[in-house]
Length: 140
Image (cartoon, rainbow, N blue to C red; front, side, top):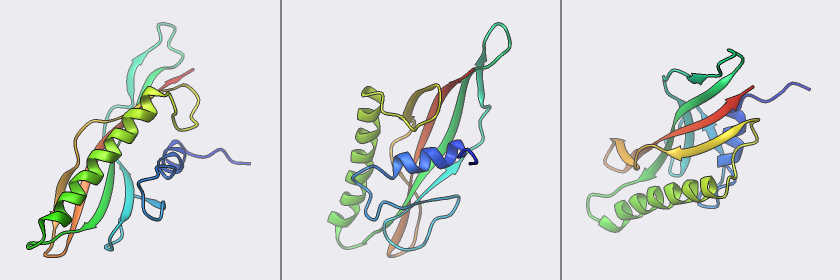
């Protein structure tokens, strides 16, 4: 049986978050309907530092967690709910990190949000929010 990619394992792990409505996350693809989610790898040097003997070291995967959500020009409560979702998701990630509950990747060391949720793009009725994330692990 073929081993799953690290992004697939991260995707499956994030899908366990109880805050996600529907729970399904895409990779590199975000639907234009409310409560659609995606993780998209972002460019970063994967090698953080190498072991002295040159065999492995600390590695990282940087990615964006994106969500499509409704917005309103007349109902601030809708927009505030989006902000609250981003805050709650960030807190869930922090808690998983404290509990050392990581994606099932050998050598997993940490997963964290490296930015707050912020508005990337919007129309009159829909918005895309992004939370930048970073996963680190030891490669042996």
